[in-house]
Length: 199
Image (cartoon, rainbow, N blue to C red):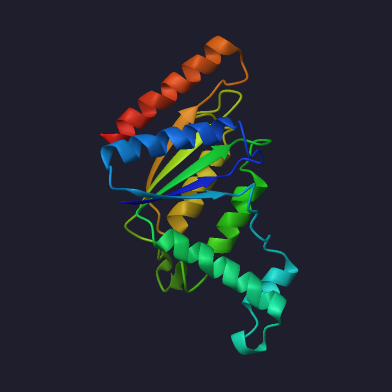
C-alpha cells in the first residue's frame, strides 16, 4: 500500500491536524507493514497559487511556454502524478475561519485539471482519480460536526468527489480549544472515528 500524507496546517510543528494525520498513517502502517509513506508538508513546500500567471501557463501550448510557465506546469504535473501513484491519501486539515487552509486550497487547485483529473461528459462531470481511499483528519478548536456552520466537510466531499475520490472517511477531533477535558474528549472521538473507518 502506498500512502500519501498531506499536512495542510500553516504550522510546520505542533499542529493538531498534523498529529491526527500522523495517527491515521501510523494505524494504517500497523495494519499494512509493507506500506510506503510519502509525506508532503504544504507549509514547508507551499504550492504555487493558481493565479493569473499560473492559469496563463496552463493554457499556453507547451512549446510556447516561458521557463517560468514550464516550471509551474511541471510542479502541478508532479503533484497530480503523486496522487495518482498512491492508494491512500491522508489529509491533515485544520479549520481556519470556518474554511480550509489556503495551503490545502492551493494543492486542490493544482491537482484539479480538466482532461487529466476530471472531464466533462454529456451526462456531466466525471472524476478521473479513481480506486483510492481518502482519510480526512479534521482538527477544530470548537464543535462543528453535523452543524450548519461546518463549511469544510461539504466542500471537501464535493471537490474530492468531483475528482473521483468518493471513498472518503472523516476523522473528527473537535473542541480542542475548549479546555483540557474537551480536548481529551475530542481526540478520543477521533480514535473512535478511526476505529470505525478502519473496520
